[in-house]
Length: 159
Image (cartoon, rainbow, N blue to C red):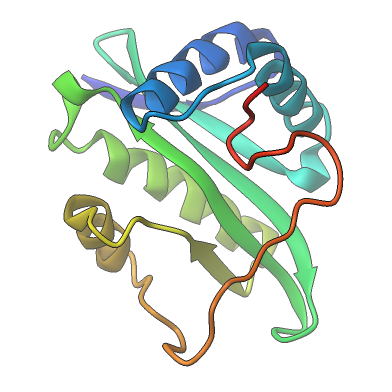
């Protein structure tokens, strides 16, 4: 049976372990303390967002992270799907869909006006899943540009 529940601060070690699997698969390095601190900050402040953990028959199989902000463009709250990970052995079994359903229900509850996600151009499975929730390229003429102002030098929580 598939279940999804909202994470709390006690879940931080599990979330860091899942994130480490995700990053290893993506060939990103991960500073586990940095990741733990990031999860603790998010889980300790409901206004920043939320995290859900997916389970199959009681076994943790993945997670999804929602972060929130106020958007001038949309005139209210918008959200970012910051991470979505499902362990390889459990993919294409509805776990990502269940996790995203919980995330979108929370967005509706909070009155979120738009949801954004960054997906790899070559990750067709992720793009298909996101598109099934209505996410798509909003404006091909615009790009998301990023500069890191503080913290780690690279964008993947590396040390």
